[in-house]
Amino acid sequence: MNKDYLADVYKDFFETPLVSEKQVEETTEQTSFPLEDVDKLLIDEDSKDLLKKIFEYMRKYHDKEEERYLDFNFVLESDNDETIKLFEDLIKKAISSYNYVGSGNSIISFYEADTVDKVKDAFSKNFIIIKDINGLKLKDENYKKVFFHLLEENLSHKIVLIEGVKEEVNYFFEFDNTLPQRAFPFTFVGIEPGVQDVYHEILEMTHVAEDDELSIKILDYISETYPKKEFDYPSYRDSLCREILFKHDVPKLETEKTMDEIFEQLNELVGLEKIKKTLHELVDYMSLRDRAKDLKLNNVNLHMVFLGNPGTGKTTVARIIVDILYHLKYIKQNKLIEVSSKDLVAEYVGQTAPKTMEVVERARGGVLFIDEAYALASKDNQNSYNAEAIATLIKAMEDYRDDLVVIFAGYTKEMHDFLDSNSGIVSRIGYTLEFDDYTEDELVQIFDGMMKKAGFTVNEDAYIELRRIIGENINSKNFGNARFIRNVYEKTIIKHAANTKDKKRKKILCTITKDDISAENLKQFV
Image (tube, rainbow, N blue to C red):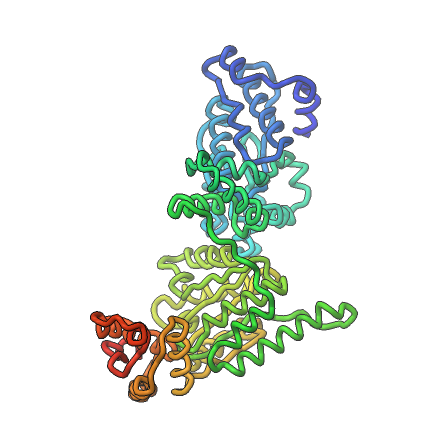
């Protein structure tokens, strides 16, 4: 085997130091290659050592110090885009420096390589990168069969690199479990930098090392948040750097809410009594299932449909559900990804499935909230693309049922039509929550809560005027419910500021009167 030969053919791989960059340059200027660049990779030490030895073997083969050509096909297990890019660049540089397999490289993304012809064309190059492995799950059996046949035929005198996290790589090799040892014996394992590494890199990027107080705050923040980060390292680092550079401070630490705090937030919402009851019962069931391990209770199907008009609290409740599921450890990350049909459906053939899967991948570990989901069942000339998006979602809901919760939301009538048009979605829905329109009293209560939170007192005449405005609009088509009240609130604050611009008494400044209540230009919200 190549890996065994690599060990046997030259023991200096394992017993003597590698040739340094300086020594390589002295040997031949033409084939110089900076082995030290390997040390910049976020891969484990064994991986770095192996990669340096492979590059050194390429050099020796080029300089005719080794006679036997070895096939080097790699696996890189990493979710760090920077590491992946640097790894790819180093291989390209080595191939170019030592002319090991000739020029020409290609990328096979299973989100983009939608035809066998594209795969064939990619395999015509000498360095082939295979990525986006999860997209392979969307392909039919014939595509998979042809792909692996082409892969088998193109492993000699080429370099093939497979990229992905460990679970994706394992899925890839399920199609032929002999491939890892037979054709891909070289696996490189990505690592996360330590807290101190992160700390020093961020100090270097933000140039605040001389500010002792801020430096200590940065270290404390990293120590607290980095081990629990929800994103890959570059995203975490860049987000923190932006915050430090913009505010000259670290973000405030968010404390995890208790279940009592979550339900206090839910119970404070006006109305929604049926929704609150359903969520309380859901949590009770999930808690019982976790506490009573001996009971044979079914797994909870958490995919949901929200039915209701605009402004009835659908998105607000979705955010609370995220807090609940995260607290109960049914999702790994406290995140809600909000999209609409335009974020899923592409303009051209073959692009919708990749676009939908990109959204799915972004939402994995949390909740995907698809607003106005009924638009996916529209009958315009994009309908075939919509059907592709729906099919991709249905498959993802099944494949990632333990790593993703999907919520479809929209107007009640349109959503019923949407669900009636696709039994595949209906069969995967565990809960249907109906959000009723707010009554006049509930809308007044919402307005009152907004004003009290802002520190205002509302007099009785103002409430009478508010009810008059609500009464004139509440039966309008597409009435905005809480959105309508939010806009009345904002316009009222603006008008109050104008009405009191010459006043100084605190009571006047903090009291909303009838003259302040404003419904100007609100037709767009009803």
